[in-house]
Each structure stands twice: as C-alpha cells, then as structure tokens.
Length: 258
Image (cartoon, rainbow, N blue to C red; front, side):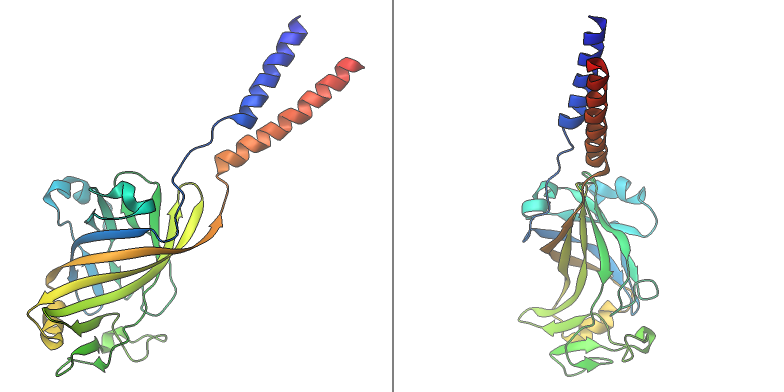
C-alpha cells in the first residue's frame, strides 16, 4: 500500500510538471499601433526626452538616468492595454546611437503598467528631403550639420524631414526597432516621431528646433512582421521535468515487475 501511495504521488507530481499552467501573455499582433505623446529638447546631435506629465512626475523622476515619460492613447491590439497609462522613453544621441548605423538600445521604450512589452531601438534612418544647412526658401528640407558626419553619414544629414503644410511645418524622423514580449515573441517595428511647428516655415522651424528648445511630439509606431517565437525558460523547464518524470516512472515500473 505504501509503495502504491508513493508511486501515485510521484506520478501526480510529474503530471503537474507536464500539465501545469504556463504564464499567459498577449502575443505581439502584426499591425498593432502604438500612439504616444510627450516632450523633448532637440539639439543638432541629440534628443533628450523630458518628464512632461505632472501626474507621472514621481515615477518619471525615479526612473534611471536618461529617461523621460510619455502618455499612451488610441493604441490598438497588443498596445491597447496601455491606453490611458504612462511609460518611459530613453533619450538618444548621435554619439551612442549614430544615424544610418545599426546599433542596439534595449528598453528604449518601457511601459509603467507592466513589463509585457519592451521596445528596442536599432536604427535611425537619414531624412530624405532636399538637403540644406538652413532650409532657407525650401518647403521640404532635411537639415545638414557637420557635427553629424560619420563614416555611414558622410554628408552630415539629419534624421529630420521638415515639411511645410497648411498650418506650419511638421518635423518628422523615423525609427526601426524590435518589440520584445515577455512570452518570448519578437516583432519588427517601424515608427515615426512628429513635432508640429505651427505658423513657421522650415527655416524658422529649424532655427527653433535645434536651438535646444523643448518641443512636444507625437509618435505612431506600427508592428510589422513577427520574427520568431522562443519558448519561455519556465515552459522549457516544465517540459524537461515532465520528460524526466516519464523516464523515472517507466524505470520504477520495470523494477516492480522484476
């Protein structure tokens, strides 16, 4: 009887190892859109994001150095859970995140609600409007600055496009990156940051933007193609324990039959 109870208990424990629940997280969905807004200080070679929301000031000030905050609204699918909440975004500089060059900035964007998704920044492309040092007389302009010259950016082009529209000028730059989900899924990211300069032409917007003034921005980031799915360590451990248990149960039964 005691042997039967021990074997039964052993089998139950192994069964739990095989059938026990695994952590549940929302998978990254192709086409998910993240819409965020915040403020930052722009210079020729840097963009420093700021703590700009009083309701989130304590959390933002307690964040690691180099982070500002943002608010999320009107986001969809994988990012819908963050609507109405805040997050943290890391400042960028041409010295550490050079333009037109592959790099890795993990935790570029983090959400304060949970750690289900973090966004890694990997590439900032150059602007593609007509190039000018001051944008004088241009309705569409990509600024040029010798401080931005690197082997992969010999012309010293900025990431910004300054495009005049009916209300002023929109300053935009693109980003590429990778979304990481806590379930091990990753997905490519493509996004755009936009800052409006109401009532200004590109030349005026350039003079204001790169003078170190604080500017509000909005951003739309879209998930594109899911790259891979990697099993979580906990899932792999449970599966491994289950296989070991099956082997041990079979060995115990053979001994009992002998």
